[in-house]
Image (cartoon, rainbow, N blue to C red; front, side, top):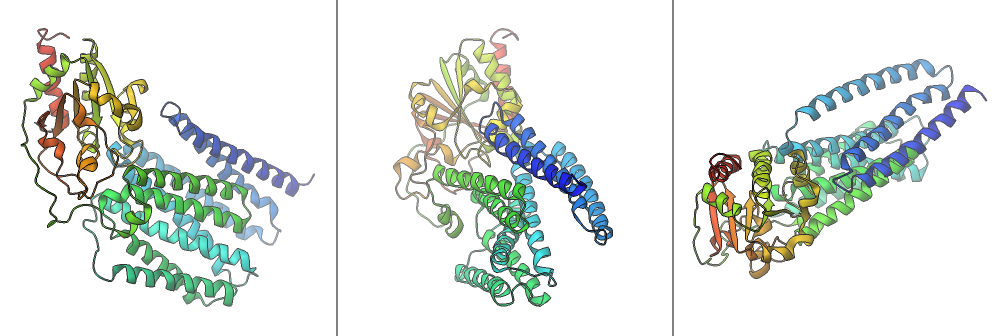
Length: 479
């Protein structure tokens, strides 16, 4: 067996192993208990695929090897730079900024797929067949849109871009840009057969990037997690298409896995907000400034953090509903310290997680796991909603729209029909909140005005410290 045959055999075996590791890793990511190991397994699969790609040097002619050597060196440099940047940034990123990092990495995946398509389309000396050309155009279009759209999503989540673009004729303008881009791409593939002028191919990519920006800018910050998930599916689809063009099974399988997972996650998040994906992309979310939302009876009743903590100390069952405010305050460690204190007094404590709590699905689970909260006291919404009516106390920390009873009762509310945590059914509710602001939707929360609700104002971490001190003081500084 010659060197070429041996290299081909090793590459094919490596790609098969990488595909298995991708799928197995994704399977393990479906549970919080095995998610960390799943990420490592999938990462190992990516490493195997990347290293195997360097063996292609054995499959070229002697005349082409000098050019390939340059590419191998560039590839190695890119690999070192990418690993170094990812390692350092991954170590530094705060848990609250994890969705932004996901958006950035996702955009890079889309950009990589678009770059592969660009290389194929700019190789005007090559002979292209129709189907691979069409697939290349589609993959390039989706990848470029995912790149620029993900960058805008990152900028919005990171607070670098504020506000939205909404004006009459916006959707018509966006549609015009999209169909112009698609028409240009189809001309390159079906009429020019891949030998279009350089300016035309460049214009295709520029328009695709512009459309990604135009598509994302009108979407509000509350919908950014859904948009990121959607772009994740786009990236997977683009990678799969480009894998077909390159006849690379690892890219095809990885693209299909990422595309299908991203699609399912997008649908799950949209369902959790009782909205369709098209509604997220093409409609405004939330209440306008002049919208009449109806009069809310009652008043907000503040209470001291220490009193709330002591009340929970003497409760039989406490359910905690965390939200993004918990992550912002980095209060998860103090929260778990408080939980352990009252558990030692025989209080049953459970955590209730809404599917879109935080910024992304699983965000709260990871945050609580970081603090050491056991998995067996963390429950998804559908598994714990029926227990709120039996809880002596429910405490909401940094959540808003996901606990608003208006979603069940007020048909005129923008969030009507959205599944929520049944916090209002507990005997006593405490809401830990910095102030009296509204949630992402801009809708006033009826829970805050309920007879059984008291507001604990302040930074979540400081509030938890006060609760801990109040409970410890009952035993003279002990437990």
